[in-house]
Every structure is written in structure tokens, then in C-alpha cells.
Image (cartoon, rainbow, N blue to C red; front, side, top):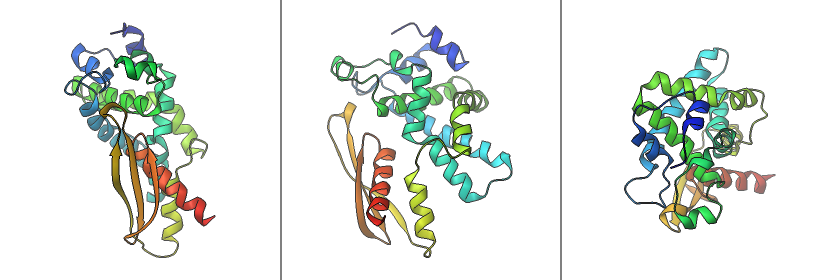
Length: 221
């Protein structure tokens, strides 16, 4: 594993348990049991709560605004951008095949590792430490999101458009997941009032959902 001292300096956190850090940086192409997928799951929850709490304490945002801003901050494009800012891809531990095919720059890998790092800090310390690090790393993205300049959040745009015409039910249904474990492609269908409208694919479920919403909005433009 590459020397992580510089990474920890950028995180503003030094790990007590080095094994947790190694796990957070290990891609599933290395092994089925020791990889960052479980930490990614945990980190995603910590991330959602951290951003939600931050937006709530701003005090002037409506529920709809908080939902929209949070979605743009925690989306794949935002997280991979934050991961690139600390050169997270350079520290990933991955199989040779994943490495030579551009795995260190692949958005889904960066997003997943970023969430895994958050989960690892939470386990190695506590929620307050994980929250402080997360807010520090996402500070620029938060500012851009609040200014409406970060990313296009198609899911929220769709929700706002649909709700103008009543209380329709919007669902994103996972249709398939193809490819090897370390490089899956997810296909998600968008359903409105249980009627299948469009599909979207991506390297993460979040990306597939965004692409399904984008396809619907473009079809209706």
C-alpha cells in the first residue's frame, strides 16, 4: 500500500487502526471479503446525515431546498470531484486488470472510496470526527451547491416538475446489474404512478437513477 501519510494530512485525520484505512482503500477487484464495500455502505449513511444536519442548521432553507442541495452534494459527480481534490485514486489498492483499464480515475471507484473513507473515520473515532472531516472536504462543493453552480441534479428537477401536477408516485427500480463484481453496470427504470417511463444506466445506482431522470426530462423538453 502506498504511504498514506500525505493522504491523512489532507483528510485532517490520522488513523489509529491502520487496517480500517487499508480496507477503505481496497477495491473489490482485490478480493471478495476484504474490500471497501461495507465501509462505503456505512459512509453513505454518515454522509447523508452530515449534509442534512448542516443544511438544517443554516436555518433559512425549506424542505424542498434542503432536499435539492443535499442531492447535488452527495451525488456521484460531487463526491468524485472531492476525491480527486485529495488524489484519492493514487492510494487505491486494486487488481491489475482494474488498474490498467483506468480504475484509479473511474468515477464510481472514487465515489465509493470517498464514502468508505468517511465510514472508516466514523469507525476509527466517532461521528463528530467523521462529520468534521466530511464538511471540510466538501466545503467547496457545499458553497457551489448553495449557489446553484455544482451539478445538475436531475432527480430533484424531475420531482419538482412532477409535483407541480399533483402528488404522483416516483420510483426508481433496479432492473439489472451486469459485469464483474468490481466493475458492474447498473440499469434502473424510472416509474411514475407505477408506469415505466425511462431507463438509465451507470456504474453506481445513484448515477443510473440520475440518468433515468435525465432521460425523462429530455424526452419531455
